[in-house]
Amino acid sequence: MVEELDNIEAFEAKETSRKLPVGWLILFWGLIIWGIYYFIAYTPAISGWSQEKAYEESVKK
Image (tube, rainbow, N blue to C red):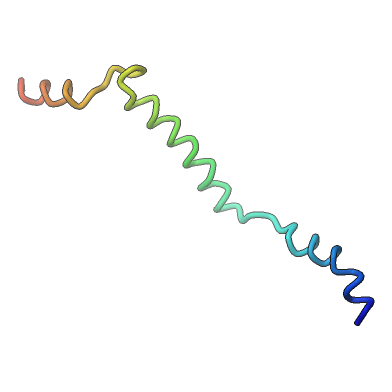
């Protein structure tokens, strides 16, 4: 019993060193890339797009 408690640090390090599933990593990086795209595409200071402009263009048609 004492020997098991002496080796608890190695056991915890082994249990917490698992790698993330590939699907989670793809989702993580995909959301970061989507967030950057969304920020660039819909920030009026960067893209010039605004809801007011879109509304005025749809009313003119």
